[in-house]
Image (tube, rainbow, N blue to C red; front, side, top):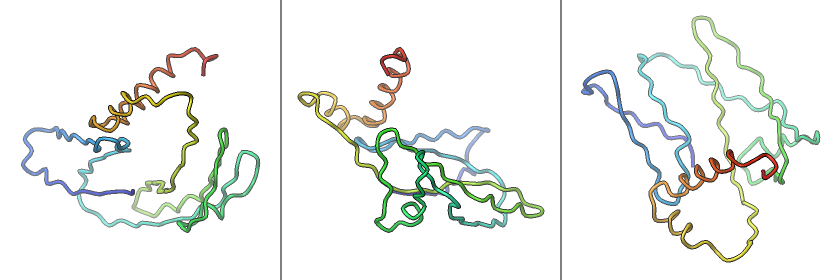
Amino acid sequence: MGARVVELDVSRVKGDQVHIRLQPPAGFWAIDSAALDFSPDQNLAVNRIAPQSARTSAGKDVSPELQATDGSYYTAMKGDSVSVGFDAPPVRPGMSRTVFLHSNGYYRPDVRSQGPADNVTLSKVFTTRDGLARLAAEQYAAWRLAPLAVR
């Protein structure tokens, strides 16, 4: 997984709108984000900066686990959080500053069976375009509507 940049030639688009439809394959998560940039080409300065701090909600320093793609991981348990701090890159004269976070990792969900598999839902996830994204959106919407005591 990672970022993908695709150059699109929109020079023949008529009007002032561009419609782009992005769909992940069946069984995959939705696309995180998409953006169009219509600004003229310009010089860019890209600075990658390492986190200055990474502490769990209990105060433990987990910076070493988060610094590199090296097989060393921070294993979060339910309810854990980590605050990661960065020094802001300097503003350069005549330029504006935009900051992006690039991160990677993986998760292994803690799934405990509470009965037989829901084969109908599983079939929808793996055979419907955007199946997993649609299921996640439906479940999130239902959770948002549930009373606080049920959450």
